[in-house]
Length: 81
Image (cartoon, rainbow, N blue to C red):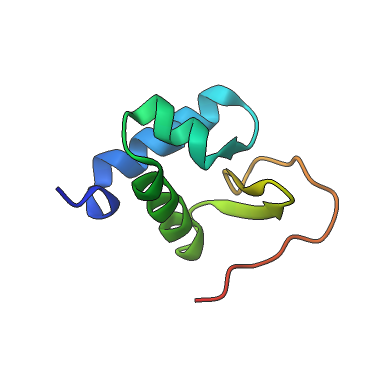
C-alpha cells in the first residue's frame, strides 16, 4: 500500500497534529498512526513540500505543524524540492 499517496493518511496526520496542539515528530506520527518510521517521515516531508504542513529542522530532526499554528518566532527553513 502506498500510504504517502493515500488521502486518508494525510487527513489523519492533520487531525493528529491539530489534536496534539503542538509540533509533532516523525516518531510521534509513526507511533500514533501505526505506520513504520520511514513511511511517516516520507509522508510528513511530502506534505511539507506541498505546503500543507510546516517543517522546522531541529537538532533532534524535523518537527511538523499546521501552517495556521504559530509556535516559532525565528526564521523557518523551507524545504527545497
